[in-house]
Image (tube, rainbow, N blue to C red; front, side):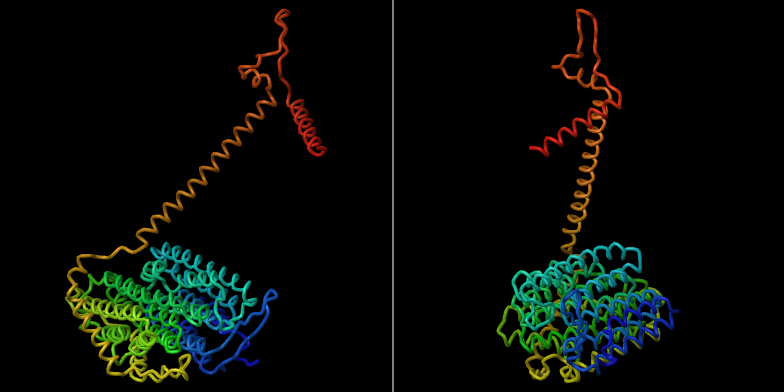
Length: 581
């Protein structure tokens, strides 16, 4: 066994996270960056096919398994973790917050390098815990959002665990066999459970509810790991794809982009676009062809880069202005040119503009839908592309180019600049030299994509023009409409009042039972101590046993000793009779 594979990297990172949390800021963040770069280097050099097999409670388990999928995830996790830790240090994040963030990275890493369902679910649930702690650490409104986040992911994890156990009853193993979920019911449970993490429509509200609330540096971590680990889990559950999962991906692409248009909060807008962009990944997994799957994971890689960059640019704006709403900003491009440049690169990348990385991977998924003749899905993805252009034209217009922000503003500091421009450079490199991405993708030897075709470039330019014209056509309407209510406007009150009703109902039932028990106990005591009073209270019974002619009355009264004796005799006689008969 190689020293590289003696311990899974997720476990090593977890141990280091504990150290980072208690070190001074400089030392803690330096250790964190070193650990992230070590993960990147390890992912590059560890041999494919490496596995660390063991046994747990009599079941076969593989704590570490390296293939093209897990290697890709480990590489991008290492890259973005190093940059996010540098950004956190430059943004005055505490060692404790960054230590929690590294534990979040560790649990996600443990999940994607798992070789069996038990190990994956173990790290999956730990990931829900560490990400919740990262949200809670900031305090304030993030605490209640963190509770809602924890409940959502607790439900999703429970469904996934149920699916895994049911799968075992039919497959006879927890190991990844390449077949995914082998029966209908566990497949449905796994799709819904994982669907919570990736933001299925209807299961997505935790995204815009949670990610705008913690420290802005924490949001850079949060936007990366949970949803992308979910895409990885979806592939493991459905390696051959499924058409309904593909269509759900198309619905996510449209729904997230549409709702993002109505957001004034920068990070809330970006959170909806996590759902939208993950929709392309889920569509690729659902289509199931080699091109679609490679495109899905290429989009995972690219999305992590440009989405983290978008959250970093939004964070710098918050850091320098104290404002989170677009309506309170304006004209920052002249005052914050570096941040504006980084935002522009990230916006063009997420929109899939030629020359930027999103153009390459998004085009692979849409081309796969076209080649498989899934026309409705293809047009859903096109519509999501128009919405993406409109959303980021809106973001850039109100934050950087329209109007004028009142107040003295400085641009990003040195550490923030290095972090942002490093990621921006990667967005351009993977857009201009797509072979660098293709070479590390799953099914690299089975696909031969050609992103820079005339038809693809024309298609994207039409989407861009439609998005530009569409935004200015509805700009006034969007401003008047305000924030569009989402599903949480319905189910949060229902959940709140429903839960309160259940709690009140149970409490009142307990109180009623308690009162009845106390009343019965008091009545029993009165019967034992003063049977005469009880008997005489019954109208049909004579008030006393008396001899009227002699004027003698025999009261029905006994002391406590006699009463207990009578009770013991009665109970004993009853038990004997029950035993005999």
